[in-house]
Image 1 (cartoon, rainbow, N blue to C red):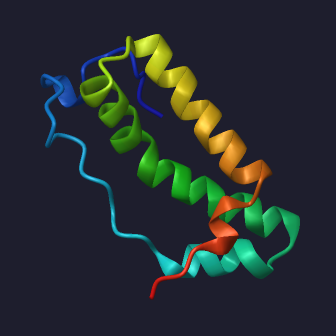
Image 2 (image 1 turned 180 degrees about the vertical axis):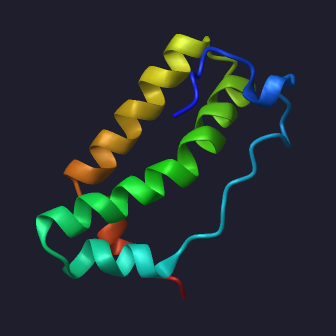
Image 3 (image 1 turned 90 degrees about the horizontal axis):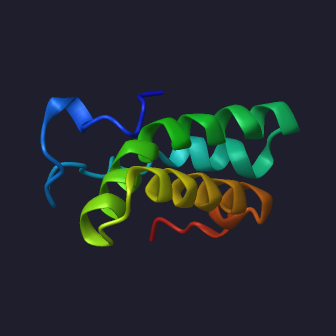
Amino acid sequence: MQDPSRPLGGRRLTPGGGAFPSTRLSLIERMRGGRADSRRAAFGEIVTGYWKPLYTHLRVTWRLSPEDAQDLTQAFFAEAFEKAWLDAYDPA
């Protein structure tokens, strides 16, 4: 994982700079019905895809420091996993 205190890709943080990826339904489905290790692996892939865009959003939109944005990003993903927020995802 990239050190979040460094500028992303060596560029300035800009509102359009951290596009969120498309949601991969296959990962959501693996999280819903799999064993604990499969759920963790699927969630890890989601975190890998969304970490940088979420971190960038927090830095740019909320003007958080690198440390605060990192802490809030980590807290968001931890709570999302613990409370199974993505189990309620409906692509419709």
